[in-house]
Image (cartoon, rainbow, N blue to C red; front, side, top):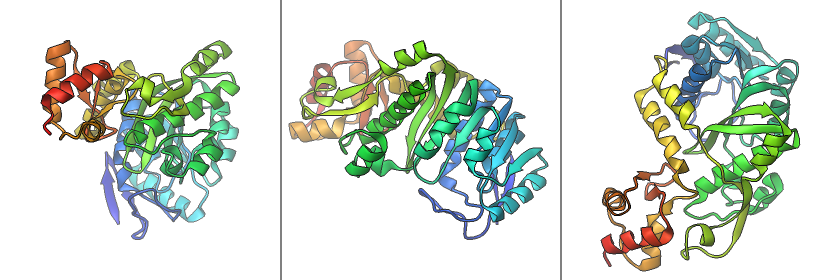
Length: 353
């Protein structure tokens, strides 16, 4: 089967297309990851690394698109020999100059310094993070895609504790919690190696979390990063809708860099979908405050129905001269730089019993 994505056409074995987290198979291709790859292409084009490592090749689509759409030289690592044959055919049919390594990710990354390392494994990024932090070039970038959401959202609490040394609540705010838990782990591992990180983009989509970070050497800045990793009590952060339970440790710093996002959108290459760019543009809005206002929780707490979110947002702007934004973490959530009391006042005025 031939599929077109971006500016590339790739061959995919007929039984290797699968949505969701996926399973290990020859030439695996996930259509749910197009947004992930689109945003990666836009970011690579914005930061212009000298080289790019696609650490888990599959069909080779990520590395092929990076080279074809941004001109950055790609290396594709893939441990499965039959998948390497698929990747080789796709490289030749797209007429791009890409190196293929039929080796485990750890072997490839440990022999060279890369400007941009992309980790998109089956499941957790934990087994691969340390070697990437060690071998990414100073001032380089690491892309991380995690599909172990049962651990990151707290729906499998033993796994959360074992894998991430954390405890979190599996509530309606779980996807912001999960993403901040992932970044907390990355920051703590980076700091242990005297590395400082800056998240460029971070988001949740369907079955995965994605973050792209810039990594620099420096113990002093790493210490500053750790100040943004702490236990969080939603009762204190948001209001009495939530119990007094400490969760974390979680990353409480920014999830995105508005400077990099704006550059990526403005300089986006042909092949990246407009709807992906619209989603990318919205991500800095998540940094308006720590956690969003979940209107479903306010409705349950007050015994009232949820007003239209557009009406709520307009009322917040009129009353407090401050914009309110839809959050991608929940279809019924809003982000605004106001207090719980202020939001609750607007909610109670507009909600109906």
